[in-house]
Length: 222
Image (cartoon, rainbow, N blue to C red; front, side):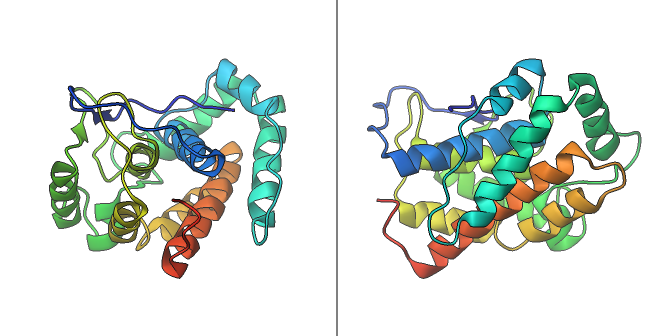
């Protein structure tokens, strides 16, 4: 299943389309796209239905945890009411003042939102010729926005070529690896987290697989 990604990045025009992806690369891009979509906004009825009818992930090697996390999320998607999920999302991530969960890199790395880590991220995004779309409310170091950036690095898109694994690794290790575990743990442990506890489990499991693959220097992404 291919999930449309959240529109968080501008793509420069006038460049050739990215080349076709391997099945594994497409699966990575799709998972990043899905996580971006779920972390930036609650799923609507159409997305819940699509998840409920999705094919299972067949585990390979140490990916049994990913298979199980996917199964739990798809089963929950079959029975969740869209309004209940929207209410849960609002309770966790949106509130007057500070919401229970703020999945921003700056907050986890420096203790403050919109701090030095965000400036460093923006410098890297500028080097990669990527930028936040005008009108998007979340900062670029939101975990959902970072998943969208990884999707673009893996898959490319209209007007932008895919990036080599070395650049994916550099971006992931600089801007996601140092803090994602704490963020997904906070989401999963937040009061009222029901559906999003499962989203957090999927996110944490998938990102751990990515981190391990990058550390080991696996060539399977080429």
